[in-house]
Length: 303
Image 1: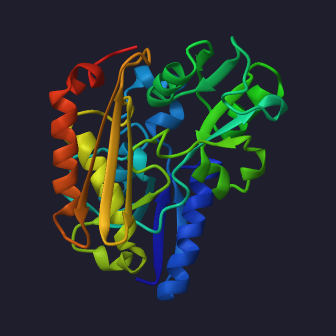
Image 2 (image 1 turned 90 degrees about the vertical axis):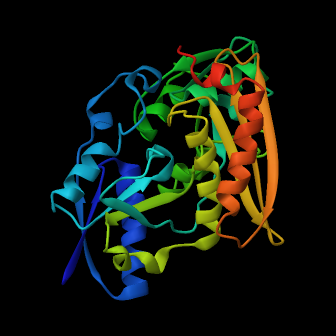
């Protein structure tokens, strides 16, 4: 293979993170790369994510292109990828994770706790909406769509008082300077897999990208995503998870929110790492406790 064709969405963020991956892969393996831009259903729709249905919204067209041979590799934001395994494709690399936290961008440099009552805060994530309502029920939460620049523009124009975005995305497009506050990942768990990339190939071609697979990142995000799978919740469900490898342990905590923010269920477990079964074992323990506490009633909610 003289040139490796890497498929990606055409957004500024998707192109930036795919370009970084392509450069790292070229450095690690010497391969020549070409980026192929693909339009997904999520790019065509302006429907709020809470109603559009998150599963496969940003990944289906990429996977179709890979299966059709239009590209050799595809790069996803891992949090957008459905948790169910694909019959013919495999995630062959999960590179080192970027900052997994959420970030607040607000007017006048205000933190989340400093925003005045009634302030309008925008997000397209049901999980973030629930977390905002749990922490600041006096705020007005506004459901928004659009790329990073569109969302930031709603703050600078005065339409919104603040927006919440993924810190990783802002860092990857060199816009972290606009962040007012990075929200603590332990107190404010983010989407399973947030900050990580998933690189898919056709089964049997894992060697194309396996050089960039990062074992600790894979263990952490697999634990987070396994909770989501066991809860039978979609990518847009009000579920936050946080897993880290520390001092020979894989630590996992997950929270499930009611959409109105009045109920929060949380469970945490740890397992020895490296152990191939650790991600699934702790995810199973966490999911079992959450389900016993009534998580299924919350993940099945609709706005």
